Image (cartoon, rainbow, N blue to C red; front, top):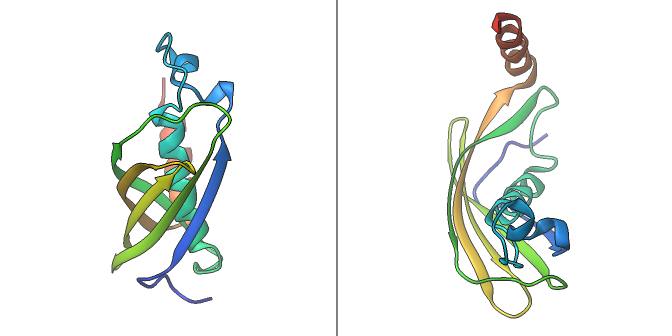
Length: 133
């Protein structure tokens, strides 16, 4: 498989439903797409960009997201996030991401992910679980 290189792009889309609204996450009356749901959609577009570009024993983990949530999106609209891999520094991958709801741009973000070894990552998780009281 090829390794990730700048210029890779990916998309993810979501129809905004009641469960996606800020009001469903404890913000009464804010019947618009929640920032949490939007952030998940942005991350999904980065994962889509990486499909087929990692070795079998690799995966990526999110490390940082700097997002501007610029406009509200009501239920019934579909939000599409588009990511472009802008920088690769060893295992560090930096994405430029934006989202549009069919009417206007609703977000822009920078998302940082790291390429990690799956076995090593999950071994660390298992060790952490074993340490809990």
